[in-house]
Length: 310
Image 1 (spheres, helix red, strand yellow):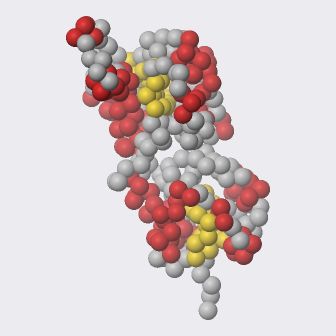
Image 2: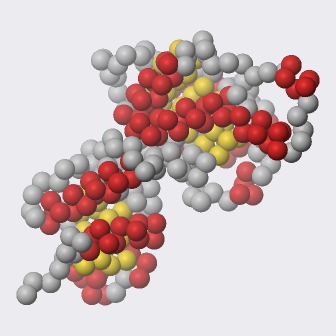
Image 3: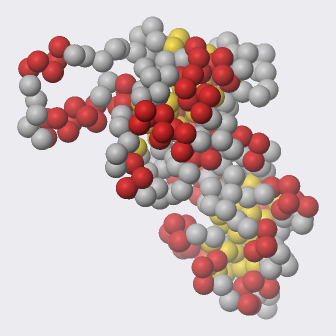
């Protein structure tokens, strides 16, 4: 009798997938409780793409042929190195773009209109009538720049237009069919934007892309929203600019370290923070899980995978 293929779970957050994987007839092992037998026989890894997956770990898996990322992002995987070893990498292509865009606009509204602060004022008994005479600006007619016009960036741009915002974008590659103008450079986009939404795919080439120069170009009245990855923004420069008043506001769903330490943000003003939840809804997560499982099934059957990483 042929032994069941072994599929590894790379992170405890993926543990709820175990029953679905076992229902396929696969044996499930856990990276954090690996046995020598599992290392020797594992055929596939089901992975949370933002979590670093070291190359030296892969070197100890001689039969590994697939890393199936449940997430859209796969920045924790060195894709060229994996493929050089004959290991394919897949991801959840575009399956949560609408949800991430919803969250991005939620962060824009929460920060720009002081919604979180307003909630605190009411709950803490600090509501005074004269506060209403110092209002925030509205959104209509303001300029929103999108960094990265992929599926998420396009979904953000469509929503921003519905709020009456003027939309422009920048990315390293032109898109002649894009519905919105592309800025000459990232710095030019930042200088022209009241709100800068970072929605690009993260990889080694854009680590720290949103640097001190870009942050200061958005300026003391501007807002930076990050729903991409923490690695794309120079977090130290962002915090320093917020404390000094060189950047007006920031609304972040992703961080340089996750979970981000609470005390890191304790004295940072004008921030709205969420715990990397933009892409996780009751609608998107089942689709992402199903695609990861289907990619494993196709690989084990010797068929082409459905959604290889670009």
